Length: 265
Image 1: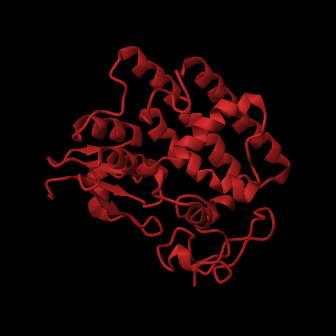
Image 2: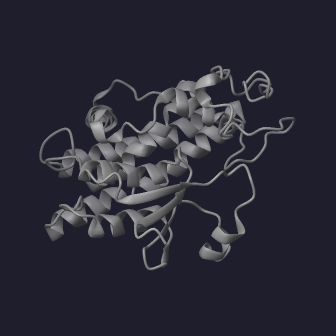
Image 3: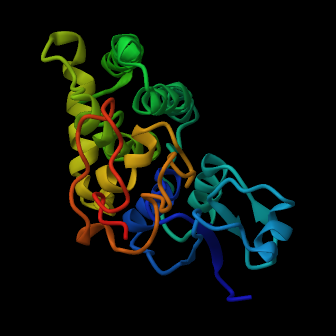
């Protein structure tokens, strides 16, 4: 045992990035040991033994050997135990308000991932409108509850830590679906929030090129390291490094690119 909390994770995972943002905000990047899991290979039996057979990541192991699952549970736990002031609001009412906003993250994330994985071009507008409806709901929430722009409260906090990794993953919607928020008043507040979250110095663990290249298989309907038909290497493979690969084709509804075209072999 290292004496530190250990997080088993996928480097590009948005749920793991939440923990990295927390540590960056605290100035405690070395307080947790991150151990990388290659999702393109079968899970290590030793890790499966720790998780009682479940494969979802991230997973946190405490210095005493206890295992915690679910990224929001892990995030809230680390927020309490890592040295420094908590991200969560101390005032009970304010904490309840940020928790209400956080409940919107699950449907938001699901809508975005279903959108990018959709393979029927006739359903594109339906997926886009579903996601836009959630953006409008968040816009309304922020206008009603936030005290000043751009964040929910005075500073980047718990709700921002939860949502920002998803804002960054949705670069894959910009690239593969040409999706963007309309430049209309009912998206103005949420756009300001999104832009401020993505620009914050503590949230720069990933970039658009990395997301677009690694999530190509998601755009073809294959998630979590699954292989696209006719391919032998997942876009989530560690090698070749994503920087050394060409940008994937934007048209996800055309024929899928080969391993060779993606620079994977």
